[in-house]
Amino acid sequence: MAGPRDNPFKAISGVTPCPGGWLVLPARLAGVTTVAEVKQKWGAAAKTVADESGQIMIYRAPGFRQVDLLIEPGNDVVSTIVAHLGDPVSLDELEQTLQLTEIRPVDVSDDAGVVLGRGYAERGVLLSCAGSEGCQMITHVAIEPIKAELFRLRAERDQHQRYHQS
Image (cartoon, rainbow, N blue to C red; front, side, top):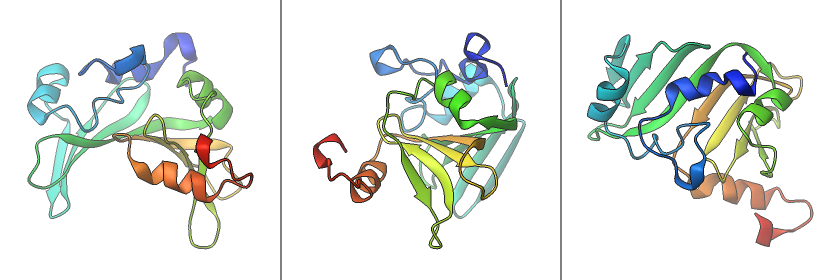
């Protein structure tokens, strides 16, 4: 994957200005931008899939295998962005590239305790891990509006009981 200077995430941003000057990811695209605005900015999707759970608009973008925009049923606003990385990228490199190093993450695990991903509550970002050998390589980046779930999960897992920081 390209380094911070050649950041492919900038290719999928720009639909809606990000608050606080944070432009490296289109965090405000999810939950704000309408389908019509996406089509105006990015053009037609390479493919669109729809079922009872909603619609997925699939785009091709440089540096990614594909970028999915999820739209919930009865809504015309992008609810989630999923960027499929071309090749797995190291967690450290991706945290640097996405400017996530100053945010205290929370591991997201399945019922057996296997870490599936790492969430960054303040940005609405979830990184999906490759394989089950820890979370050192990332295959997908999901972006959603900032919600309470990741804050709650981080507070529940806080070993030091620093709830005021969660």
